[in-house]
Image 1: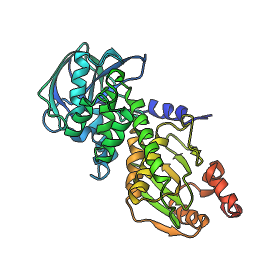
Image 2: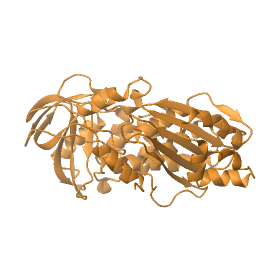
Image 3: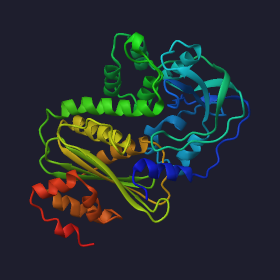
Image 4: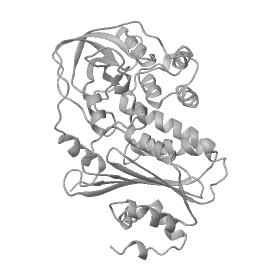
Length: 389
């Protein structure tokens, strides 16, 4: 029996049968720009560029913010990602003055694609799928790597040269200036932010959650000072074999994330969830990085509106779903929050509106929940109506 989301996703990704791009030991091409820092053997990690065996503008291949607005299909995204070849060298995380790392920093600070040349120790092989990171194609140790001249993004350049600016402040400032999350995260991961002597390489997976949680914490500090919304709201969005319902409540901040995987592997109906009350969450979420990606996206929308609310998010993933990384959650929720919303006077009415849009009975979400169940009971709402199945 599968008891955790991590175990389920490991089983799911182990069954991925796809073919990545085929390249030789030498490669001329472009980097979108893109880098990847592994976490295995931390604090001595495998770091390197992500390269495409073609030249020209390849930015679309590592620009997750543009995929959903650009109506890119799951097949389009997988095609982009499996064309990315990962080169890697093992490097200590504090060795940010290494000449190879300096090239990775140049890539991460770039405002456009960069032509490059690489020589690998062996022919790159394999591929990688993960719920945390976007997929990528084959990988191999890289023996030689050169890039053309790079034009840096102006805002990222300012942060790089400000060695007195804390990394947390750099991340929040760049977000406020409208830089894409993926650009901020990549620059953060290769040690271009923070107090000079404290700069380190950060594994890509960890850097994504670090940036999401940093932004969520900062946004929540602001949102707590705003007036509450006056009614219950429901926002919806569907893409990439997922459906999302975001329910905002006229309460102080409290948050629950629930995700159902329905017949993705076989005939399973699994729900994973986590939550926090107004005091926030102290320990790392049991559902992983998507918890923080969703939280950040909701709080970002509330901060823009200058309103406070609670939030319950229901996600369903359907047959054909492929793990593409937590960008999937962040960008879907972001797009949901940009849609017109429906208003309701009570939580029961909001749930009754959402119910027909779900493939799983709403009662199963309620049974699995902590916060949603508590909210229904605290308002003396009978639960019987939701448990007819």
